[in-house]
Amino acid sequence: DAGVIQSPRHEVTEMGQEVTLRCKPISGHDYLFWYRQTMMRGLELLIYFNNNVPIDDSGMPEDRFSAKMPNASFSTLKIQPSEPRDSAVYFCASSPSANNEQFFGPGTRLTVL
Amino acid sequence: TQLLEQSPQFLSIQEGENLTVYCNSSSVFSSLQWYRQEPGEGPVLLVTVVTGGEVKKLKRLTFQFGDARKDSSLHITAAQPGDTGLYLCAGAGNNDMRFGAGTRLTVKP
Picture 1: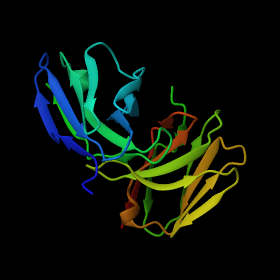
Picture 2: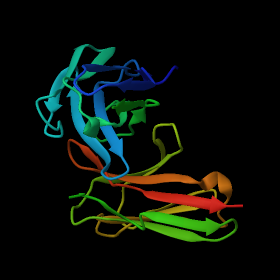
Picture 3: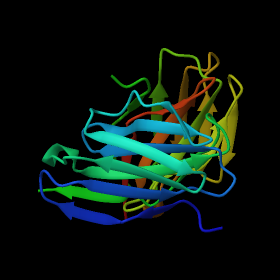
């Protein structure tokens, strides 16, 4: 089992550019979560999906952030336009249920200059 | 505002010492999970506690769930450098789970 796969592992971009982060959840997991982690704010839930449908996006910071899950094996988190304050590590996690163990990917470290 | 408050935020100790970290909330949880995160990796589940007052042991780690299911503690005996990492607690509600900010532990050889 490959676990949760995220790409890219590192992304450096300039302010104003579009950034797309990708995630492949563990096969058979119905729930997919996107988190952002910083030293100041810790691990923040941005959005989660159940069976490809967004359930709670109240953690999405603003309209510059959007997430999609076109099928059970793929999700994207897009930031457009990116800003320096978006610099963080973004994690994707999947789970069989909303309140069960979550399996995290290795994260994408985003730096916006 | 964090739903789950973890303390201390940072802890630096010498190898062989004992330590306890705490996870507190005003909310009642159906279960509570503890994760450890190492640098450059995602969090990994250590244990899940479900019943109020429950105590679980994982080698040198002892986890306790409060009687009211609002708080939890993690005690490490004879800490080792390999215990270094970020310890996160996560409280499960009916349809979601929320993480605390974590305790960053450093164990010096």
